[in-house]
Length: 209
Image (cartoon, rainbow, N blue to C red; front, side, top):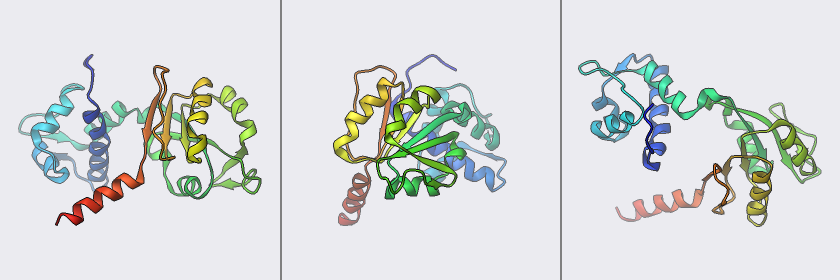
């Protein structure tokens, strides 16, 4: 792999490539050209070739890409085969929905446990994942060293909780709290999910037509 800084734009396109290639692979497609893939994704073929060139040489001129091989390579680049361990903090409506319906294992994440403050939830299970008390959080993280925390907690506790988890060694956050989390600690990364942003983007598009 080339030693170069990869732009955020390229990084954010990689999961889309993986998703489309995974769909093609499941449909039995053996190979595809950059033009055909770009047409499906509404991306130019040159953009696809430029993005992939950041990570090495893929495909053959006149043949295109082997779907299974490119899917596996992009999955490897994305770290799907690294076996990341993950905890969910906040098992209310949204946290419950994620635990119940999201296939974390398909994208290489192993759910260790979930945590909540509600006595009604503590000790219950969702798809064999036990909900623990927040009082157990520090000792659990120190013992099992998960890589990622999914946050579905109130906004008022989001940043203090993130700071606490960073001190405990958590390096990645999938943040659904609608607060932009930040840190000065190097090597820690946030993916802040804002449902309202996408809904307002949709509002803009339908309002302009």
